[in-house]
Image (tube, rainbow, N blue to C red; front, top):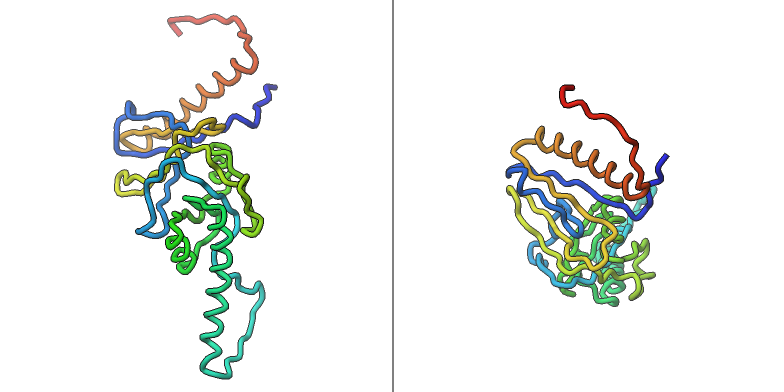
Length: 227
């Protein structure tokens, strides 16, 4: 049995609408995502990236909560407390001066406003596996609480962040990584069937190449041209 080391991390992304010759290997990560606000930056050189697995929205109670409003100012007071809580979370992020925030959870409209005001772009509801790959590609650390954010947690290994529109879908690219331990194979093809077949062929080739690199030995065999 061959051991596959943890540093080998590749992902295949399939985008229909072009020929197979347009496929390429990306030195970084590609996600089928767009920034959460249309005024946020979509192209950032040498981005400082913060990765989170916590929501940037007001935390509601896990059980049912009854609120009794006695005065007309009570509802306004509730909104003020919610705004204060979200601003506190965004201020923790702004202290480390990131250009891009990526979280596995949601981002409220109010949080988007504060992040936009601080000049920070944001992506939300990113898969856990994709967040881990981004961390490996740009040398960042995923944080569960914004209060714990420090300078060493910020990913600075990426050379470019940009959002592109391909076939009326938005894709974000984190590329030109200095020492990426993760990459993305972008497959193009005329149809989904061709893309699926190409992915199976590439996976077979990748596993064969990996086995040769890890265990450089070949078993002699026979090839019959008539078979």
